[in-house]
Length: 258
Length: 202
Image (cartoon, rainbow over all chains, first blue to last red; front, side):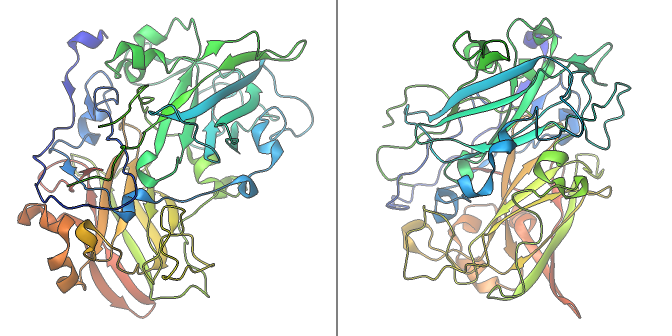
């Protein structure tokens, strides 16, 4: 599955109409960086063939509709929501290696993104999701649900505890297994800063074989999806620590002129 | 123009197994948002928006997440990004909804018709809902909008609709049907193919 041989069709761009108008006094967001974001069509990931928009994206000037977004703050979450070793426990601890994951959410300008909601979900240690349509023949863990949510602090930082997710097979190609990963969903400050991504683990032998990971053609950007093992984040006698920083879209220095 | 220092984190597909986290009602848990966005006390015209999400072969996309964001009936967003205090907030209306498509690819939102909000050059935009589609098979999410068929005059004046070639505009306009239960707007979203919905680079 070499990335070099797979078709890459990035979203095209139509010419922007020259209206010369100030769209809003609020600072607009930098564009989605299609040199970094994965394309809609990546043939190594077979489901993209019928699920990829093919016509050029239409440029959308950022109006109030794009410069706003829902806010779910600290009142929307509880402390236990950030501890997946406890938030699904029925009669004991979940099986597997306990981990602590911590990181910082910033924008492209390097500024912290405080008070933003992060939602995460993952398999249990055996590579099985709680999800009702996951039919993988691996055991469920009665003490592990695998979902959590939390809000970044004033410096954009977050921390959660969990267990290391397992690898699991999928139907994309012969002997396909997904590398271990944790799904991340971030709202950010506006509807256009929405980001859904996956965090991987360092040294995973499946990463160079995974078309979803390889769909990010920029090697530096791709490798930033891999968390770092951290002695600092590790909790003595309790949990291995990993660091995973996330960068959302930044802001333009001046109001957008369309 | 931009003091860009670091590059964006790439997106990755939401995959097929997000529901127990993002739309977890069937798992006995409460998510942050569902597809019933308006309560009995919410001001404005109560409406339903419904349709199907279809792939390039016309097949139902039965495992996708549709997210919507809209202004309230007065045309105010419940967000720090909308500081127009002269336009009232509605404490019963957040304006954000989530729906996982069902086995037929159907999605439904019970909401209120949004008011008009300013757009380019402070001209009013036609009432619309912003939409994000996430799915297995989509490495990056797709952005679109839903407009309303009974707003013909506002739609004609809308700068965003005007920026789209005329034959593709109908892919964004939901058809109003008046039913005994209230107004229902219908719009299918075609990810690919001859009837491909207009998707935006916002």
